[in-house]
Length: 166
Image (tube, rainbow, N blue to C red):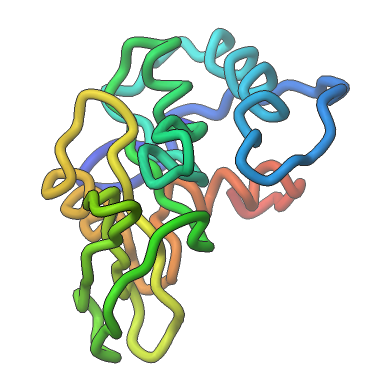
């Protein structure tokens, strides 16, 4: 799904139906989902300047989650914005929007826990490809419009679920 920025209005939806052969294995999401995402990307007439991915970038045990994988394959800046923490730890966050804490894993900062909605669980932002962590957090923050998830991934999920309101 391609959105305009900063308006976050839907420009185009690229959808495919494809059989997924790779089983769900935590930490190997890219091998399951990338072929379908790449097929949908190829259908787009409007190629995005930045891709927000519902998954990890370098906040991954192998430092190469689905956001990194897609960024390298497409040679496009990518940001991982996951709903759960795959590896590492972070300090407690405040309850207000914008509260953040570095995610550390094996002595390295690999991402940022970010509160995008008051009193709601944080999201986990990490570098995918060609984007620094500060910029990645800024992109995610700027794309949240009253929901926990940024609009690009939230709307893509609704579209993939068959929601006609997208």
